[in-house]
Length: 225
Ligand code: B12
Image (cartoon, rainbow, N blue to C red; front, side, top):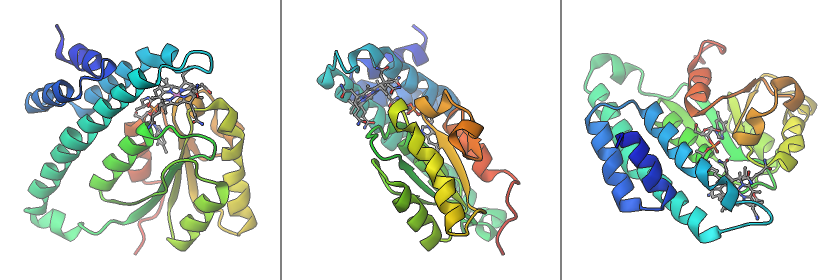
């Protein structure tokens, strides 16, 4: 069987130990991280029908969740750390070691889904961004207060719950009220992806974690001196 398919199935079935070992093998074979994250997400996608208001098979979903988090923390984070360590030995990397951009990230109030946000935060932390992770169920005021206090460049907001989407649009209104229009707001997560920047009143809606990372690292901002 295709190893990425196998990884999806292992996550879907909550086989955390085997999922970690499968992901390690894939990374050792230079499988792109994008493909691994896609396989993890596919594994959880199958559980969609076990996570509805009417049918909530919590144990199955939580076991899959644990397997996914372990792959992210034990395989992907370690691989990213190794890449960073290797880079740090080069002169060029030593010069650019200080993070130049700050991201405040969290899941919007009313929503407790945090796996996608965890992946984004992990990728960004290892790609030279300063990341302040506010966790889940985060109010508009918490996002804005923290972004201002930390002199952030970006607010990253995640939402998988359609009913919570309207709160996202309040973030830019609150930033404007506080005279901080320059802070860029990026939304992501299954529910946000179904919408548009205009409707969510954000600067960008990321298709996935890597698209978000590209946006945070792109030339849209002048690099702070
Ligand atoms: C796992 C899961 C849970 C877990 C969450 C565990 C956790 N720690 O996160 C638990 C069991 C707790 C849970 C609870 C509930 N869930 Co649930 N859950 C899911 C499930 C199966 C997978 C979600 C997931 O983690 N996917 C994998 C991650 C990696 O994908 P992702 O979040 O989309 O993230 C990727 C990108 O979107 C991006 N990204 C995400 N955020 C951000 C942010 C930024 C800034 C950027 C740049 C990128 C980015 O990066 C990731 C990698 O590319 C989904 C079904 C689905 N496939 O979406 C339902 C789902 C989200 N749940 C749903 C529901 C209804 C619920 C409950 C209400 C069920 C209930 N009976 O109570 C509760 C919610 C309670 C609440 N108030 O939030 C619905 C939501 C429907 C809707 N559209 O409103 C879904 C879609 C299932 C369905 N019925 O269709 N759930």
